[in-house]
Image (cartoon, rainbow, N blue to C red; front, side, top):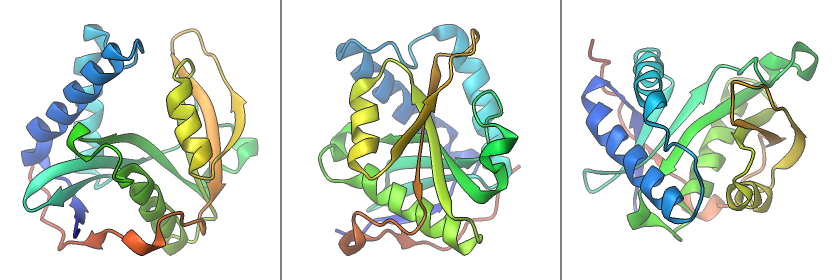
Length: 187
Protein backbone atom coordinates (compact mmCIF):
# COMPACT_ATOMS: atom_id res chain seq x y z
CA UNK A 1 0.00 0.00 0.00
CA UNK A 2 1.28 3.43 -0.91
CA UNK A 3 1.83 5.88 1.90
CA UNK A 4 3.36 9.30 1.52
CA UNK A 5 5.31 11.37 4.00
CA UNK A 6 5.42 15.14 3.92
CA UNK A 7 6.29 18.10 6.11
CA UNK A 8 3.53 18.97 8.55
CA UNK A 9 2.14 22.47 8.66
CA UNK A 10 0.00 24.37 11.11
CA UNK A 11 -3.18 23.08 9.44
CA UNK A 12 -2.22 19.61 10.69
CA UNK A 13 -2.39 20.50 14.40
CA UNK A 14 -5.83 19.04 15.03
CA UNK A 15 -4.99 15.82 13.23
CA UNK A 16 -1.72 15.54 15.15
CA UNK A 17 -3.47 16.12 18.47
CA UNK A 18 -6.08 13.51 17.51
CA UNK A 19 -3.26 11.01 16.95
CA UNK A 20 -1.77 11.91 20.33
CA UNK A 21 -5.11 11.61 22.17
CA UNK A 22 -5.76 8.26 20.50
CA UNK A 23 -2.30 7.02 21.50
CA UNK A 24 -2.73 8.30 25.07
CA UNK A 25 -6.05 6.49 25.43
CA UNK A 26 -4.55 3.27 24.06
CA UNK A 27 -1.57 3.57 26.42
CA UNK A 28 -3.85 4.23 29.39
CA UNK A 29 -5.95 1.16 28.53
CA UNK A 30 -2.69 -0.84 28.52
CA UNK A 31 -1.84 0.49 31.99
CA UNK A 32 0.86 2.90 30.80
CA UNK A 33 0.69 6.47 32.11
CA UNK A 34 2.54 8.04 29.18
CA UNK A 35 0.91 11.19 27.73
CA UNK A 36 -1.98 11.12 30.18
CA UNK A 37 -1.09 14.10 32.38
CA UNK A 38 -3.44 16.93 31.34
CA UNK A 39 -0.95 19.48 32.70
CA UNK A 40 1.53 18.62 29.93
CA UNK A 41 -0.84 18.90 26.95
CA UNK A 42 -0.40 22.66 26.47
CA UNK A 43 3.39 22.38 26.72
CA UNK A 44 3.38 19.50 24.22
CA UNK A 45 1.21 21.46 21.79
CA UNK A 46 3.44 24.54 22.00
CA UNK A 47 6.57 22.46 21.36
CA UNK A 48 4.85 20.70 18.47
CA UNK A 49 3.95 24.05 16.91
CA UNK A 50 7.62 25.08 17.14
CA UNK A 51 8.72 21.82 15.52
CA UNK A 52 6.17 22.26 12.74
CA UNK A 53 7.29 25.84 12.08
CA UNK A 54 10.90 24.66 11.92
CA UNK A 55 10.08 21.86 9.45
CA UNK A 56 10.96 19.08 11.90
CA UNK A 57 7.53 17.40 12.09
CA UNK A 58 6.26 15.15 9.31
CA UNK A 59 3.00 13.34 8.65
CA UNK A 60 2.29 10.11 6.85
CA UNK A 61 -0.88 9.92 4.79
CA UNK A 62 -2.77 7.14 3.11
CA UNK A 63 -5.47 8.21 0.66
CA UNK A 64 -5.52 11.68 2.21
CA UNK A 65 -5.96 10.50 5.81
CA UNK A 66 -3.32 11.07 8.47
CA UNK A 67 -1.87 7.70 9.49
CA UNK A 68 1.20 8.69 11.52
CA UNK A 69 3.61 11.40 12.52
CA UNK A 70 7.28 11.69 13.39
CA UNK A 71 9.40 14.61 14.52
CA UNK A 72 13.13 14.78 13.89
CA UNK A 73 13.93 16.86 16.94
CA UNK A 74 16.96 18.58 18.31
CA UNK A 75 19.00 16.58 20.82
CA UNK A 76 17.31 16.64 24.23
CA UNK A 77 20.08 17.75 26.56
CA UNK A 78 18.19 16.46 29.58
CA UNK A 79 19.31 13.06 28.28
CA UNK A 80 22.01 13.30 25.60
CA UNK A 81 25.43 14.65 26.55
CA UNK A 82 28.01 16.49 24.46
CA UNK A 83 30.25 13.43 24.90
CA UNK A 84 27.62 11.43 22.96
CA UNK A 85 28.45 13.43 19.82
CA UNK A 86 25.20 15.37 19.63
CA UNK A 87 25.59 16.42 16.01
CA UNK A 88 26.17 12.89 14.67
CA UNK A 89 22.53 11.83 14.93
CA UNK A 90 18.95 12.64 14.13
CA UNK A 91 16.63 12.42 17.14
CA UNK A 92 13.24 10.80 16.76
CA UNK A 93 10.42 12.26 18.83
CA UNK A 94 6.63 12.00 18.81
CA UNK A 95 6.53 8.88 16.67
CA UNK A 96 2.81 8.12 16.68
CA UNK A 97 0.85 5.81 14.42
CA UNK A 98 -2.91 5.65 14.25
CA UNK A 99 -4.29 2.55 15.92
CA UNK A 100 -5.95 1.84 12.56
CA UNK A 101 -2.48 0.99 11.25
CA UNK A 102 -1.34 -1.13 14.21
CA UNK A 103 0.50 -4.25 13.10
CA UNK A 104 1.35 -2.83 9.65
CA UNK A 105 5.01 -1.95 10.47
CA UNK A 106 4.33 1.74 9.93
CA UNK A 107 6.38 2.74 12.97
CA UNK A 108 9.29 0.67 11.70
CA UNK A 109 8.97 2.20 8.25
CA UNK A 110 9.15 5.66 9.83
CA UNK A 111 12.30 4.68 11.70
CA UNK A 112 13.82 3.54 8.39
CA UNK A 113 12.83 6.88 6.86
CA UNK A 114 14.51 8.68 9.78
CA UNK A 115 17.67 6.68 9.05
CA UNK A 116 17.59 7.73 5.41
CA UNK A 117 17.13 11.35 6.50
CA UNK A 118 20.11 11.00 8.85
CA UNK A 119 22.27 9.65 6.03
CA UNK A 120 21.15 12.46 3.71
CA UNK A 121 22.32 14.92 6.39
CA UNK A 122 25.67 13.14 6.77
CA UNK A 123 24.77 11.74 10.20
CA UNK A 124 25.52 8.17 11.21
CA UNK A 125 22.94 7.51 13.94
CA UNK A 126 19.24 7.60 14.73
CA UNK A 127 18.57 8.24 18.41
CA UNK A 128 15.50 8.37 20.60
CA UNK A 129 14.33 8.41 24.14
CA UNK A 130 11.20 6.82 25.46
CA UNK A 131 9.19 6.52 28.64
CA UNK A 132 11.25 4.76 31.32
CA UNK A 133 8.36 2.49 32.34
CA UNK A 134 7.04 1.64 28.87
CA UNK A 135 8.72 -1.73 28.44
CA UNK A 136 6.56 -2.66 25.44
CA UNK A 137 7.78 0.40 23.55
CA UNK A 138 11.37 -0.31 24.57
CA UNK A 139 10.97 -3.87 23.22
CA UNK A 140 9.60 -2.47 19.95
CA UNK A 141 12.67 -0.29 19.51
CA UNK A 142 15.02 -3.17 20.36
CA UNK A 143 13.22 -5.31 17.77
CA UNK A 144 13.72 -2.50 15.24
CA UNK A 145 17.49 -2.75 15.72
CA UNK A 146 18.07 -0.09 18.37
CA UNK A 147 20.51 -0.66 21.19
CA UNK A 148 19.86 0.65 24.68
CA UNK A 149 22.52 3.25 25.51
CA UNK A 150 21.53 4.12 29.09
CA UNK A 151 18.63 5.32 31.17
CA UNK A 152 18.60 8.86 32.52
CA UNK A 153 16.16 9.89 35.24
CA UNK A 154 16.08 13.66 35.74
CA UNK A 155 13.45 14.37 38.41
CA UNK A 156 11.34 16.58 36.13
CA UNK A 157 11.07 13.99 33.31
CA UNK A 158 9.46 10.55 32.93
CA UNK A 159 11.15 9.75 29.67
CA UNK A 160 14.82 8.83 29.61
CA UNK A 161 15.33 5.31 28.22
CA UNK A 162 17.89 6.14 25.52
CA UNK A 163 18.59 4.08 22.43
CA UNK A 164 20.27 4.42 19.06
CA UNK A 165 20.96 2.49 15.88
CA UNK A 166 23.14 3.10 12.84
CA UNK A 167 21.43 5.27 10.24
CA UNK A 168 22.05 2.69 7.51
CA UNK A 169 19.84 0.09 9.19
CA UNK A 170 16.62 -0.46 7.21
CA UNK A 171 14.39 -3.18 8.64
CA UNK A 172 11.59 -2.59 6.12
CA UNK A 173 13.33 -1.85 2.79
CA UNK A 174 10.47 -3.42 0.83
CA UNK A 175 7.98 -0.85 2.14
CA UNK A 176 9.60 2.56 1.88
CA UNK A 177 7.51 5.67 2.39
CA UNK A 178 7.09 7.90 -0.64
CA UNK A 179 8.16 11.52 -0.30
CA UNK A 180 5.31 13.87 -1.12
CA UNK A 181 5.74 17.35 -2.38
CA UNK A 182 6.38 19.56 0.62
CA UNK A 183 3.64 22.03 1.38
CA UNK A 184 4.67 25.54 2.25
CA UNK A 185 4.65 26.11 5.99
CA UNK A 186 1.66 28.13 7.14
CA UNK A 187 2.26 30.72 9.76
